Image (cartoon, rainbow, N blue to C red; front, side, top):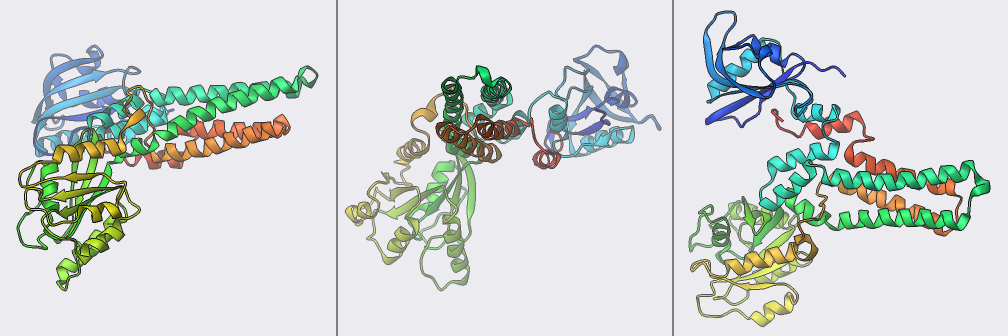
Amino acid sequence: MNFDTIAAVATPMGEGGVAIIRVSGPEAIEVVDKIYRGKKTLSTVDSHTINYGHLRNPQTGDLVEEVLVSVMRAPRTFTREDVVEVNCHGGIVSVERVLELILENGARLAEPGEFTKRAFLNGRVDLSQAEAVIDLIRAKTDRAMKVALNQVEGKLSRLIRSLRQNLIEAMAHIEVTLDYPEHDVEDVTQKLLRDKCLEVKEEIGRLLQTARQGKILREGLSTAIIGRPNVGKSSLLNSLVQEEKAIVTDVAGTTRDVIEEFVNVRGVPLRLIDTAGIRETEDIVEKIGVEKSRQLLQKADLVLLVLNYNEQLTEDDYRIFEAAKGFEVILIINKFDLPQRIDLEEVKRHFPNQPLIMTSAKEETGIDLLEKAIADLFFSGRVQQDDLTYVSNARHIQLLRQAEQAIDDAVNGIEDRMPVDMVQIDIKKAWELLGEVIGESVGEDLIDQIFSQFCLGK
């Protein structure tokens, strides 16, 4: 498989201490050697060494940058190609000049995700490991990072390969019975196939049980903060974010647009959405904000419903109760430092099984209890175990569900004593679907689509 030489900035654009331009391909060392000036040429230095020098324009001789250049020869690199990483000063102009110079001397600008794509195509990683790279980059909590790191290191891949091996053994046994029917003991064959299929089904089921938590870790928990105006929604957002992100006043209707923030709550990544207070209003701008709030509520994984301890329930509160039914809801009774006027029994009547937390955003009390309630609601029980293999990618989840159904069909066929060659069709389908998770049987279009989501330098 032949590739050209590619280059891209591997660090975020902007001002910083150091920036890295990554070059990969058969002429990576040669390309950078044309512009590098140091004690030795890069073609003569040892692999996996860092070399100090300067970059100069080979046409004019002008000094471009002072650099450290890492040289890594194939196959002991991420892409399994020759790789050169140029470390320069992290200014916007500096980075652009270095990259432009590299491109002028024989490299091509990499496409998004092309480095990781080459790692996959060259057999350095499988598809599930490659997809986990972007999860590792985007991880917003320690737990999310650990899940992604386990997948990058191949924990999910090893499990999928083990399941496929069980199915291969089942299919091999079927082939033997078809070739040598005189030696087949039907009851023994039926039991062996059933046991193998049930073992695979159980493991797939266990993986799918982690899917909800895995997706939350990967994408964040979409959390809508709703309630009437002036009950303390924006104060709650500020307390969770620990920063003054939302304007807080005593004037009802201050928040008129949607404010979004990511926050780490005891390992749970929350995508907090502070919405405009939901109420009937004639104000055109506020009315648009209220409508946005209602739309976002429909997409929320978790609803934090804020009520005022110091006010009686109103018609607007009851309308919000109706809108929130059917969602995961945590009730927050705010302004607990003021005299009680709310009917808590009436609130519990509408939400008898939902957590209820008393808070005072003003005195910053009750936030710890709220954080614990969120963590307990979504990350309790077995999900706390560190040795679990999580599945978080929507593509993987869909393939696993299809594979589980194919195994179900195979087990039903075995129990109905269908001919083994018919059962083999379902077993092979499950084997192929599991192969798609790790990229053993996947089309070029899907590969291009997956890697197009990556950043340029990855």
